[in-house]
Amino acid sequence: MSDALQAFVDAREIWEVPLAASVVAGALLGALGVYVVLRRTVFVSAALTQLSTLGLVGTLLVEERFHIETEHASEQLAVAIAVSAVGALLLGAFRPRRLPAEATVGATWVVASALVVLGVSRLVHAAHDLQGLVFGNAVAVPASDLAVIAVVAALATAVHAAFGKELAFTSFDPETAQALGMRVRLWDVVLFLTIGVAIPPAARALGALPVFAFLTLPAAGALMLRVGFRPAFALAASFGVLAASAGYVLSWLWEIPTGATMVALAAALAVPGAMWRLARG
Amino acid sequence: MKEPLVAIEDAAIGYGRTALLSGISVAVLPGDFLAMVGPNGGGKTTLLRTLLGAQPLVRGRLVRPRALRVGYVPQREHVDSIWPFTVGEVVLMGRVPMLGVLRSAREADREVVRRALARVGMEDLGDRWYGELSGGQRQRTLIARALAAEPELLALDEPTNGMDPGAELATMDLLRDLQAGSPLAVVMVSHRIEAVANYARTFAFLDKDAALFRVGDVAEMLRPDALAALYRRPVEVREENGRRYVHAAGGEGRR
Image (cartoon, chains in turn purple, blue):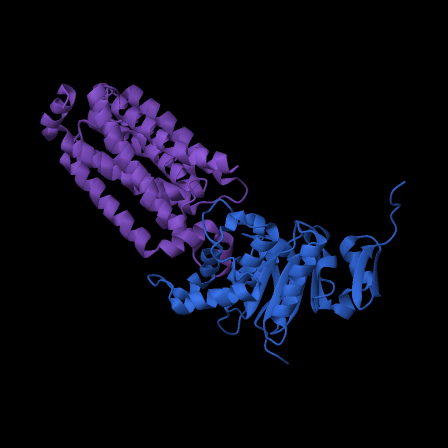
């Protein structure tokens, strides 16, 4: 065993929680990404990620400005989840008839992004956290964050297992589902909530950029292989796990940025599907 | 007099509080074939969705004397073909509303799907990817999905849109065959009266821009005056070998 690998194994106490959080987040986001990609709502995940980051920045601002102690990780996470969930509710339920849905999503993303920049510019002590918020800080994930990610993953899995046929039908053909009396808006809200609640804890562990990547690349890679709807969830989750775990280990061994390594691996895992599709014409 | 399956009485249709078209009264009886005809953007789909209860009325009354099993066929361009569903999976979705939450499909549901596929002549294509089918096969798949709901009312939105004449005729013949000897009611939206002239028994002409809504049977509606009101130019109807041909009169043709 090489020295670097031995050092990695010896440092197990440092990485076991962050690695576990990355793996669970990779699986969860990879699977949810199947809906994100098929519904052509990739930008929704970007908007929700930005809203989640805005929630985190908001808690830091409150702490600094009003001297209220909110720096505890779980409180920041609770606010981020709340902001993201509200965003998911609004994006899921609100469909302006005279504007394309992309306009609402785009406006949400750009306004949230601007507010994050403005918020960070007003931070005095916590501005250095921005790097971690955007690109992740997977070497320092508390056990409480891992617990939150695991609970969210279990809940999302339960929701999708219980209501899979409703979510699939209303997403695939909302017009027909509504004509047959199904409550399409309600199911949209349920779906977006599972995504909106999953993003903040994952973003705290991985960072906004890897979260966005995990919601698109593993699912795109799986779907391009044409394995079918249900198997696509399992395959995308597997791609997510592989990219998260291998990305974490390689970034440690090669001393390169963790989030970016995960994104690069997720992209690499999408290549076989793209090649296969190209070969098939 | 049969009781209507569904009816709209003295209604205005539209979005929110904005009425697109007023003074609408129309009923669908068991076994009827109602064609809603008018120009694109004339309010046909809005009327269809309102009739199905998917769109609220601006004014008036929606009458549905009892619970109704509905099958719906959207415009096939509205169904995204990137979803990796097989034909069988798409057709099975027709059973979802009646299954209820927390219940998965059983063997009886799969048997209904097999029968629905057989009725549209696609019994051997259940395992094919929906996205890899031809336009006509996709249309048949969507009709099979509507049939999987075991409907009393089959509603179709522009099912022959973009089809070549042969495929259009095949689709219309299929609808006729589905109705043969059955109380199934069909409501079909089409911007082409030629597509439905030989199949519908009742016609509703509507055009929100001309504030036009008129409903009646074949004898009443396939007359030059009624058609001229819809198309705002002279229209002729002629019959050859038992088939009606509707075409705009005049025009200079190629010079």
